[in-house]
Amino acid sequence: MPAVPLAVDEHGNRLVSFAFGVEHVLPDGAPMPMALTALWHGGEVVVVRDREQDQWELPGAQLEPGESPRQAAVRELAEETGQVPGRPLRFVGWAGFLLVPEETAGYAALFTGPAAYRRAFPAARPGEGIAEARWWDLTAPLPGRVSGIDRYLALLTRPENAA
Image (cartoon, rainbow, N blue to C red; front, top):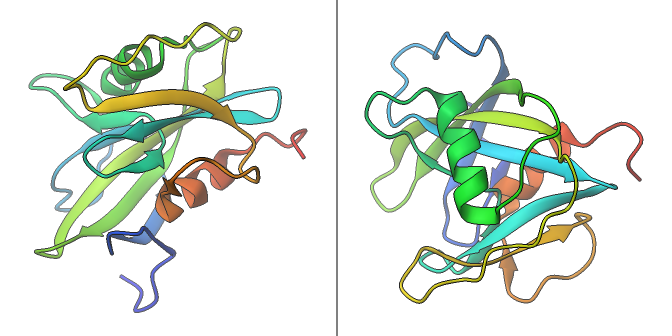
Protein backbone atom coordinates (compact mmCIF):
# COMPACT_ATOMS: atom_id res chain seq x y z
CA MET A 1 0.00 0.00 0.00
CA PRO A 2 1.34 3.45 -0.87
CA ALA A 3 2.87 5.69 1.78
CA VAL A 4 0.81 8.63 0.49
CA PRO A 5 -2.94 7.94 0.55
CA LEU A 6 -5.06 8.57 -2.53
CA ALA A 7 -7.61 10.41 -0.38
CA VAL A 8 -8.40 11.10 3.28
CA ASP A 9 -11.64 12.00 5.02
CA GLU A 10 -12.18 14.41 7.92
CA HIS A 11 -11.89 11.57 10.44
CA GLY A 12 -8.47 10.43 9.22
CA ASN A 13 -9.71 7.33 7.35
CA ARG A 14 -7.50 6.78 4.30
CA LEU A 15 -8.07 5.40 0.83
CA VAL A 16 -4.73 3.68 0.26
CA SER A 17 -5.35 1.76 -2.97
CA PHE A 18 -7.76 1.31 -5.83
CA ALA A 19 -7.60 -1.74 -8.08
CA PHE A 20 -9.70 -2.05 -11.20
CA GLY A 21 -10.53 -5.71 -11.23
CA VAL A 22 -12.91 -8.58 -11.44
CA GLU A 23 -16.11 -8.36 -9.40
CA HIS A 24 -16.03 -11.93 -8.10
CA VAL A 25 -12.33 -11.93 -7.19
CA LEU A 26 -11.64 -10.14 -3.93
CA PRO A 27 -8.10 -8.88 -3.37
CA ASP A 28 -5.91 -11.29 -1.38
CA GLY A 29 -6.82 -11.23 2.29
CA ALA A 30 -9.67 -8.78 1.70
CA PRO A 31 -11.27 -8.12 5.09
CA MET A 32 -14.52 -6.29 5.82
CA PRO A 33 -16.20 -6.41 2.42
CA MET A 34 -18.35 -3.37 1.74
CA ALA A 35 -20.13 -2.05 -1.33
CA LEU A 36 -20.43 1.57 -2.52
CA THR A 37 -22.39 2.99 -5.45
CA ALA A 38 -21.85 6.10 -7.55
CA LEU A 39 -25.22 6.57 -9.28
CA TRP A 40 -25.26 9.36 -11.87
CA HIS A 41 -27.96 11.47 -13.51
CA GLY A 42 -27.42 14.63 -15.54
CA GLY A 43 -23.82 15.12 -14.40
CA GLU A 44 -24.68 14.68 -10.71
CA VAL A 45 -24.04 11.76 -8.37
CA VAL A 46 -26.33 10.83 -5.49
CA VAL A 47 -24.78 11.29 -2.03
CA VAL A 48 -26.07 10.68 1.49
CA ARG A 49 -25.27 12.45 4.75
CA ASP A 50 -24.30 9.84 7.32
CA ARG A 51 -25.43 10.82 10.83
CA GLU A 52 -22.65 8.95 12.66
CA GLN A 53 -19.78 10.19 10.49
CA ASP A 54 -21.50 13.58 10.00
CA GLN A 55 -20.36 13.78 6.39
CA TRP A 56 -21.61 13.32 2.82
CA GLU A 57 -20.75 9.95 1.30
CA LEU A 58 -21.64 7.59 -1.51
CA PRO A 59 -24.47 5.20 -0.60
CA GLY A 60 -23.23 1.87 0.67
CA ALA A 61 -22.56 -0.39 3.62
CA GLN A 62 -21.11 -3.68 4.78
CA LEU A 63 -22.46 -6.84 3.21
CA GLU A 64 -25.11 -8.80 5.08
CA PRO A 65 -24.51 -12.54 5.61
CA GLY A 66 -24.81 -14.43 2.31
CA GLU A 67 -25.02 -11.22 0.28
CA SER A 68 -22.80 -10.43 -2.70
CA PRO A 69 -21.23 -6.97 -3.10
CA ARG A 70 -23.58 -6.29 -6.05
CA GLN A 71 -26.65 -7.25 -4.00
CA ALA A 72 -25.49 -5.00 -1.16
CA ALA A 73 -24.90 -2.08 -3.55
CA VAL A 74 -28.40 -2.32 -5.02
CA ARG A 75 -30.02 -2.84 -1.59
CA GLU A 76 -28.25 0.08 0.05
CA LEU A 77 -28.88 2.38 -2.90
CA ALA A 78 -32.62 1.70 -2.65
CA GLU A 79 -32.73 1.85 1.17
CA GLU A 80 -30.66 5.01 1.54
CA THR A 81 -31.79 7.02 -1.48
CA GLY A 82 -34.87 5.45 -3.08
CA GLN A 83 -33.05 5.66 -6.42
CA VAL A 84 -33.00 2.85 -8.99
CA PRO A 85 -30.31 2.20 -11.61
CA GLY A 86 -31.43 2.52 -15.23
CA ARG A 87 -29.50 -0.65 -16.09
CA PRO A 88 -27.43 -3.17 -14.12
CA LEU A 89 -24.68 -1.48 -12.12
CA ARG A 90 -21.16 -1.74 -13.55
CA PHE A 91 -18.43 -3.03 -11.24
CA VAL A 92 -15.50 -0.58 -11.22
CA GLY A 93 -12.99 -2.06 -8.78
CA TRP A 94 -11.83 -2.57 -5.20
CA ALA A 95 -11.05 0.36 -2.88
CA GLY A 96 -8.55 -0.40 -0.10
CA PHE A 97 -8.94 1.52 3.17
CA LEU A 98 -7.19 2.04 6.48
CA LEU A 99 -9.84 3.03 9.01
CA VAL A 100 -9.20 4.89 12.25
CA PRO A 101 -8.67 4.59 15.12
CA GLU A 102 -7.17 1.08 14.93
CA GLU A 103 -5.81 1.37 11.35
CA THR A 104 -8.15 -1.46 10.36
CA ALA A 105 -7.64 -2.54 6.74
CA GLY A 106 -10.68 -3.22 4.60
CA TYR A 107 -11.99 -3.23 1.05
CA ALA A 108 -15.11 -1.94 -0.66
CA ALA A 109 -16.47 -2.93 -4.05
CA LEU A 110 -17.27 0.18 -6.11
CA PHE A 111 -20.19 0.12 -8.55
CA THR A 112 -21.54 2.79 -10.88
CA GLY A 113 -24.30 3.43 -13.35
CA PRO A 114 -26.94 5.88 -14.50
CA ALA A 115 -30.19 6.41 -12.62
CA ALA A 116 -33.36 5.35 -14.40
CA TYR A 117 -34.68 8.82 -13.52
CA ARG A 118 -34.69 11.06 -10.47
CA ARG A 119 -37.06 9.73 -7.83
CA ALA A 120 -38.05 11.56 -4.68
CA PHE A 121 -35.69 10.83 -1.81
CA PRO A 122 -37.27 9.04 1.16
CA ALA A 123 -37.88 11.10 4.28
CA ALA A 124 -35.17 10.64 6.89
CA ARG A 125 -36.29 8.89 10.05
CA PRO A 126 -34.87 9.84 13.44
CA GLY A 127 -32.36 7.30 14.70
CA GLU A 128 -31.51 5.93 11.25
CA GLY A 129 -28.02 6.20 9.81
CA ILE A 130 -28.84 8.47 6.87
CA ALA A 131 -29.94 12.04 7.62
CA GLU A 132 -30.63 13.04 3.99
CA ALA A 133 -29.78 12.37 0.35
CA ARG A 134 -29.29 14.66 -2.64
CA TRP A 135 -27.79 14.96 -6.10
CA TRP A 136 -24.35 16.60 -6.28
CA ASP A 137 -22.13 17.75 -9.16
CA LEU A 138 -18.88 17.26 -7.12
CA THR A 139 -18.19 21.01 -7.10
CA ALA A 140 -21.14 22.84 -5.52
CA PRO A 141 -20.86 23.40 -1.78
CA LEU A 142 -22.87 21.03 0.41
CA PRO A 143 -24.00 21.86 3.94
CA GLY A 144 -21.42 20.15 6.14
CA ARG A 145 -18.40 18.00 5.35
CA VAL A 146 -17.87 15.87 2.28
CA SER A 147 -15.83 12.68 2.52
CA GLY A 148 -12.65 13.23 0.50
CA ILE A 149 -12.53 9.49 -0.06
CA ASP A 150 -16.03 9.28 -1.52
CA ARG A 151 -15.44 12.35 -3.71
CA TYR A 152 -12.29 10.68 -5.09
CA LEU A 153 -14.19 7.44 -5.78
CA ALA A 154 -17.05 9.34 -7.45
CA LEU A 155 -14.52 11.07 -9.73
CA LEU A 156 -13.25 7.64 -10.83
CA THR A 157 -16.74 6.82 -12.07
CA ARG A 158 -17.79 10.19 -13.54
CA PRO A 159 -19.43 9.72 -16.95
CA GLU A 160 -17.35 11.12 -19.80
CA ASN A 161 -20.10 13.48 -20.89
CA ALA A 162 -20.34 15.12 -17.45
CA ALA A 163 -18.60 18.45 -16.92
